[in-house]
Length: 71
Image (tube, rainbow, N blue to C red; front, side, top):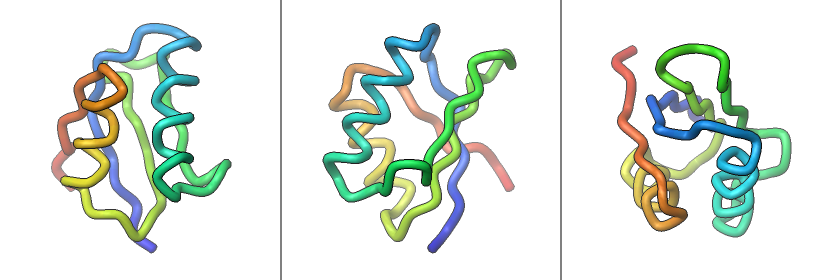
């Protein structure tokens, strides 16, 4: 499993729920992702075997942006 971090444009709990539902439908376990809505980058953290590109695609298909953060 790899931990990926992304800057997002999520703004609220509803956004987080939509992103989480999309991730979980694509095999990310419940509890293997989190979204920090308090910081300016709205950081999404995902622990998964999915690639960063897969996660960006899933989040984009859910109607949001995700930009990988540099490690």
